[in-house]
Length: 317
Image (cartoon, rainbow, N blue to C red):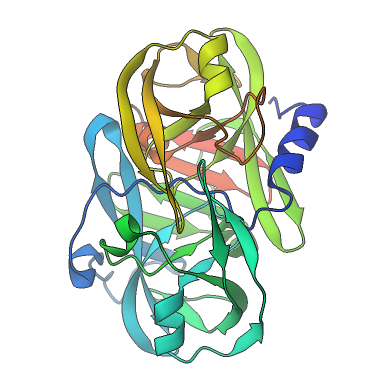
């Protein structure tokens, strides 16, 4: 199994070292908070199993919404967002619930092609469905207008899922399982932990060249490639500009067609990706990307094995 080359990893880490999270949450559905919540699982559901609502959009776009209770209140819709290096709660909700302030700071959060300001860190005691989550400090941010209009109240990031060892998403059934790694085709990934932030990098070859480091991001409804990577491989532009809603900010992108790419020995389905100047907050010349739910969902089940440093695909496209 191939993992991203160490030099490539160091370069990507340099891009996101000061970023609180990496996410490209392109909203594919809007509605009231209760309309986004998934149905609860039956009382006898297996331990560590969660219900999620899979929001669908064009070009296989997908987002995952979980039902979260905070201090017994809610439920509130949160995105299952492995591309978020730290978990986030919407600032107005944090204020409404009087979540304890752990640290007051003004930082910069890196989204897909844009940055926004963070507020305080707050202590959150929460659970998803029937599963209790570790009490952790989360960053507060005013979610972008596009995201807020969908009533999404926060992001459940890789800093949270890493603690369970693995996160397995069955996109067809709308079920997430924690701590279980099903059999399937796998590729080695690099799980990078820095100061409590967790990022998962997977190697991706494009047009027979690479590998290039891509962030595994279930919170990205569309995959993303840097403009430099799109130019290098002459990826055909099929639409643009389109508005990308990231965390607390928006940016403009083009949509390109990707027909020949793979991760390790696993071919990725031909599809589309957003092309952004600096998807990870880097500089010109960085050939990087984000592997989003539009690709992950086409395998049926995608599992991030944090403990085993693998990305496992089960089912078919």
